[in-house]
Length: 432
Image 1 (cartoon, rainbow, N blue to C red):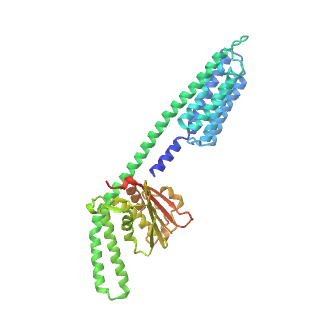
Image 2 (image 1 turned 45 degrees about the vertical axis):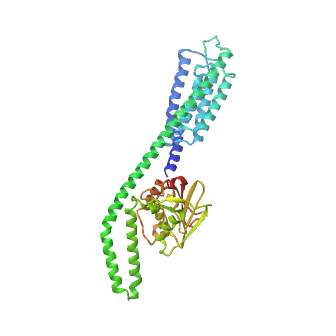
Image 3 (image 1 turned 135 degrees about the horizontal axis):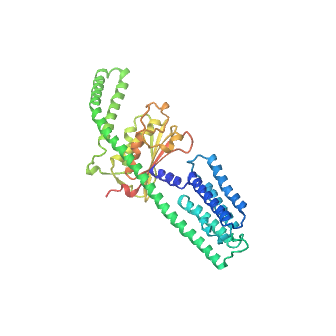
């Protein structure tokens, strides 16, 4: 989940905010208007003022259109942002064409949209816009209207100087774009890492709180559970000859023992196992996990998918046993008839897949499974009743603590059950 969050965060950080473009364009419209008015009214240089204002009006019209069309906090998709920034480049190129091409000292402003792209868009977008600026600069070095100058006089710079201006524009474009991209990319990576760290810490705080609650629950439930076990034993002794109650009493005792085992597991998650029990094979681990879930009328199939040579021996980890046990228990709760536990290994990884033939995870919250207080199944048809949604969160966190990556998904055929894939790098589980 942390990884998925990081991907989404990185993707969103590469989408340009519409309000940023609108404000920058209003600044450009104001600056262009002041420059045109200053040259036309104060310096009184002759040039096509009306066409220049028409180009400026196009930029203002686009701003108004986007302001009314989208909410102010809208983030543009990369393609849309490229289109808008390309318009800005062409609009500035059009103004430069009317006012002397690369002889105009404002020619360097063509690179501004590329710098904006470098700070907010993917590298391919910046490269495409940079290529557009280079093409426009090349055309403006050869095709342009005369530079506005005093009436009756013509200002024509030598071609060598114009070529130098072209080189300066392209050099500034390359340097500033690469520099801005690297600085922005490092800032994005740092922000993503900080966000992911905060998310991990938040989840660890949740788990720490639940650890305390589990210990308290185990302590408080111990006494009433012992009383229930004693009463069940007395009932069995008194009514063992009555067939009407024998099956119910046996079920009551078995469930009491199961509760004891669960509480024992909760209180032993942090304990250290005996030395001779500190290592076990994968098949032994799986058998230990599924054994408490065999007597509930659900067929459990265990299949080895892959793996050659000697079966790996791994460190015993109570967190792994509890986490996998929770996944198997959840599958048993929602299966119709059968669950499957498939496992295998390669040279680099170990994999366990738990699947059932129930209705599967609810599609609308499939991407949020594993978060606290989120249930991914339809509890209405489950005879075991509802829950708080903490089971999968605890299982996922404990397994991820051991180095596993977990994927929750539905099986290939719709309505054919859920599937949980747990994968470890082999070096994470190998004994020292």
